[in-house]
Amino acid sequence: MNTDARQQALVSWLRQHGPASARAIATVLGVSQPTVSRLIQRTPEVITIGQARATRYALAHTLGREGSCWPLYRLNADARPERLGTLQSLHGGGFLFQPDQPLPAFTHGDFHNGLYPGLPWFLDDLRPQGFLGRAFARRVARQIGATPDLTLWRSDDIVRALLQSGEDLPGDLILGDEALQAAMRAVLQATHVIDAADAAAAFAELAENALRGEAIGSSAGGEQPKFTATVREDDGQLYPSIIKFSEHHDSAAGRRWADLLACEQLAAQLLQQYGIPASHNRLLQYQGRTFLQVRRFDRSTNGGRHGFISLAAVDAAFYGHGRIDWWRFADELHGDGWLAADDARKLRIIGWFGALIGNSDMHLGNAGLMLGNERPLALAPVYDMLPMLWRPSAHGEVVARDFQIALPSPQHLEDWRLAAQMALAFWQQAQALAPLSPDFHQIAAICETRLHQAITRFG
Image (cartoon, rainbow, N blue to C red; front, side):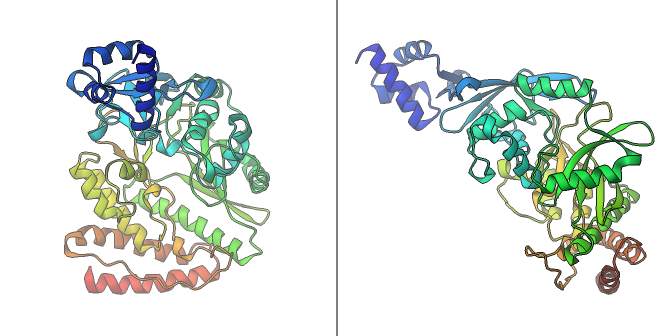
């Protein structure tokens, strides 16, 4: 077999089998390892991974004109770009991340050599998802050559979207020069800024646009209708925000979503009073809708950003639970060095608090960490904390729900006691909360009674 034929065989085998050692390649091709080394030097699409005995070789995967290797940047809290390293796409769906500096949190555990079987876990939350993710997909689908249906997107589609339109996604990471340039231009000239005095009317218009499918803001996760906007508040600062909104109040579903948004504001305020960081928000009502403006904790008022990673991304990469009670996962995260002891305790309390206010949507995507270079990572402020047990059905009907009090085993009793007192305060204050409907006042009274009984018996 001549050299050209051996090169073709090498490329074909790596395309089929993925990263391999020189020894494995030599065995398959029936040549010596020095011959393999010469073949690799003559084949530019072969990528070297690792060093010494751990060295592996893989085949680069090219995305047309976008190429196969891109810089990964961070836009830091001072709105200054930092280059973190390069991301290389590999045939078979894998990626190689080569950091410019030590990033032990990014390359922890099985990823110590920078090799990832799919999109690296620290980019997982940049995938378009939820209500705004679908709008994002419709907006960029044509320019990246993808279907508008987000559920049919492949890994290549996601990478192209990040490269061409990933300038304003959750956290502080930006892939590629084009997206970085767009992000830096936005720092110099903030667009679509809304004055706080005009916010209600502006929100009403943006809500209608969002429901018509227009691309409003970045791809924040979640199914609740929402859009993003920058609000200039009374202190003169610009606050990038996520704005959730209800349907019109003249429907039962609209009235119930208005109740839930008011409850979300109350829950955040209570958590803050107990020393647990939570999103800052304000409630507005206008033209028959309720709006909850939630300040983004992954953004600074000067255009800077803060790193973020959901617990769902950490779990998928390192644990594989899929779904687990937050108070159980907190101890595991602490034991493995992801969370400091105090933050683990806070996550346990948050988990119990959510369960005791009827938050039935406490999946791991609804909690996260502030992504930095090293572990442990700080616990992110609480977001999306509301009594989702009472949300309308998928068909828009408001149906009765049975609220069962989550009770602790002995080892969780101390955390449960504090969370139960917080939840009791939540249900007591909800009964006097003016924006809530009479129906939800009644729900709050029933929940207070049941929780008080549980505290008396077990607390």
